[in-house]
Image (cartoon, rainbow, N blue to C red; front, side, top):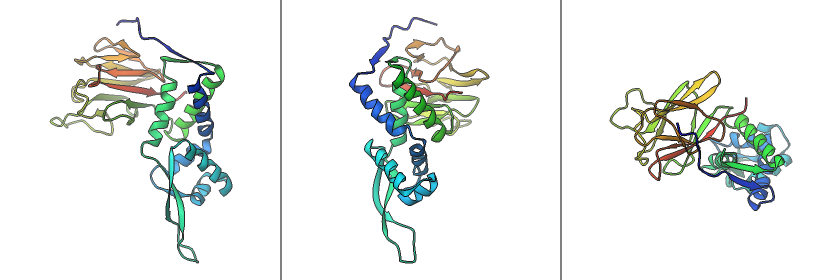
Length: 260
């Protein structure tokens, strides 16, 4: 394996404009109540009173939380009909997550914590880690995930639940033993990625953590731009960037592993 990673590390200073915006973003997401709201309205729009009951806080506090989430564009509100009462049915504002909203949050936080990005300033770094951990607990259920960056599946999240998970492009001719639920099955558009029935690679869970292995693919596999030897596994960490093949026909996976 080539251990020399020639890709530069991106250093961001705490007074940079991008980090000022990140700080404001973290302020909104630092509340576990707001993350519980996102989980509650993930599948179905809800009005403020239903949300207030779910997160067990006052209607006034719930409205403040909703206004914060609206400010970063992760939720939207639209007119709907409230529950029937003795006075009839009345219109209410219903809140829901914008399409891809949760995925966007995970992507944003993950990219700022990627191993190739070094944030100078312990205060921002520690806040970022805290928000990521809270997000993982409240929304993802503390399950390690792999998020697709770029291409037709951009933003798609795969949960790492099984001890071995195959990774590859969809194979319409060989469906035996391949399930979209258990394996990381990518769209046909990633033409440089080996079909999942071979597969391109696989994630393996061992006692000390998660590993990735290239299963003899043509396009190869890289972790943080470091090429893996075929049929050799290497441990992955939170924030690692996995590349299956190179260029626009390959795919990048951002790894998110909760602490502990």
